[in-house]
Image 1: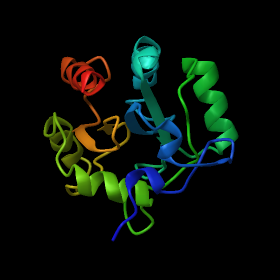
Image 2: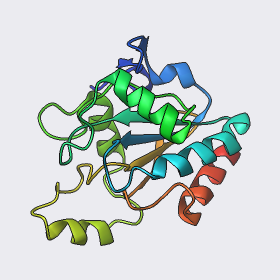
Image 3: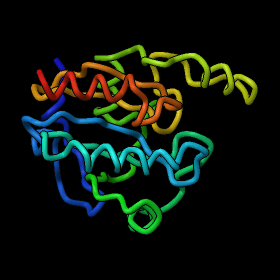
Length: 180
């Protein structure tokens, strides 16, 4: 039996112990992030969505990961500084974790099990094939994959890495989760 999503131990980017229970009753968009990726500018859209919807009970949670082409090589302090200075990120960030392979963090094991298919899946996977074999489904495809968790801790949607926060599909899913 696996632990509920809300009970999985986490660490904030500052090293404090945490769990998703710290965000109980909120709609969460959980994103694996990277500072040196072609998708890194998505931080701006994630921050804008967070600022727009946080008063309604919405949070973006960023989980830096260095799983894809070494695109998150920095320390937690370097990542935090980059996010703050480059994108004025104010949403909660967590310590660097693995989102693929044998070292996959239990949170990501639970997320990918709960929601094995991503909305918008396809175009980026095909593009990545030109560089080799992409991480097979249901694994996380690349940086900036997004998991939407409702107020009750259920994973209700998943978005491919190249589906940005301002995509109508993301916005509609967030609105539906906030209304639910």
